[in-house]
Image 1 (cartoon, helix red, strand yellow):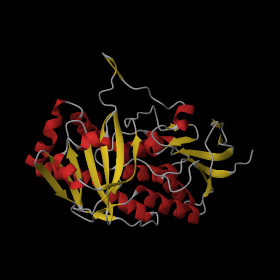
Image 2 (cartoon, one colour):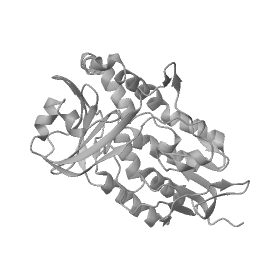
Image 3 (tube, helix red, strand yellow):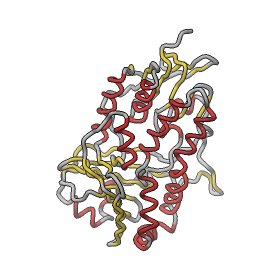
Image 4 (cartoon, one colour):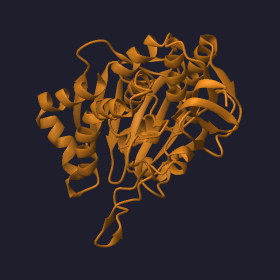
Length: 347
């Protein structure tokens, strides 16, 4: 059967659209399956770290936003600031970024179809999903990837002596507020149960993303963060609360026949250090470069995710343990070490 395309991208979020652009630049015919209308919103921190901003610009996209010059950890009056050594990042509202990437993918010649990727089937010559046949399939369909499940790469949650270990099952919530940004740093306010990421995204608008356990309420958790609560006092919420999670995703492998898992679908640690999009864009580039060599893609995936798995994984382990209260004081006492970690993950 003659394929409809060289590459079928499942999922039209930022990583899927980036994969489509990369494939078109490689001279491949591309079809993207995404059932939702653009622009697509998502609960996320919306901060493009310097490395992510450079990667987005490489794709021909320069979405407007607010300059981000560093990271500030804050807890009970303790502050640990680090300003980026090089170029700044940028706070960009998710819908603005998505619209720009969607337009760039269409301009590059990718075909975007409004449908779901149901019925994944593959053979030696190609793979079919959503009624489209292609030589390769890039699964960029997020944390709850349908493709990952259908091709058998899903990994069950780890078990502990008490059954399923839910202690580290973390979720994200995000709400925007109509208030003038007060900083060019991403502020991370550490509370008793959650971390609140404050990201300015435009004049008069900031996003607040909470990371923490299941069942968290935005207003209740903000009440435990007096500095941030005072900043937002009287600010009008802009739009609904959006949620995502659980954030921890493990996979058996990133390849199965002609299928490649890319972005959140391929495995996810946590959004705690803000590097998720940079890593996803690097995976998209690697997947296209190694379509015909699954072992090479596995090696590239391990390389681009190594810092996240080690550094972010360690920080998440501390945040979900009795060591939680010591994270910000330690960062304040050891500014060079804290800065080195921030720089490593931001680039």
